[in-house]
Length: 207
Image (cartoon, helix red, strand yellow):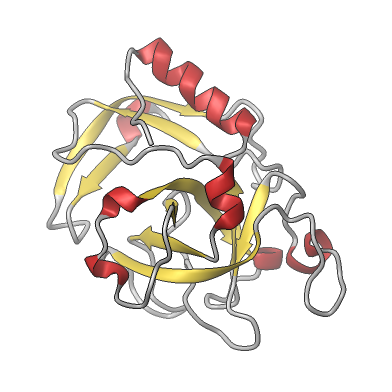
């Protein structure tokens, strides 16, 4: 995305929130158009700081230990619904590194269509459930350094950190609710973020 086309919405709806433009928008140099190379991520430098402090980048140990991830976005709530309203949900992590076997013995990479070591998968096994949908790509996948319960909306968000970025549906299906693939914040991704943030003179939040 070019800087003039990039923007951030701070609020609960696209039309009703504070819209902040960008001075820079940088796509990862290894990005592929189909999003299947573990680099489906971009960084945007806002022209004005957001009112709230940013979340920190999650250590990989947090991602590996997390049982669920918190997904947030302005996308559709289901296939035929409209988007534009910010929603969140907690989705079970079924493969934190895409390097294990599924419950039926298949390699995760083949079963889900994810990239080993660079992506993670969150899905409800056996039935459709909490999931990202069209319009959520590029949004945050959060993990907590503490157990998260169903009433976790009341949990202090300082317990969360950014563990990944929404990429696409499992096996690139067009149906929402079957599970999502998220770019994992690997050491390489974290280093790229840190390098670009330092170039911009923007400090990263500490854990």
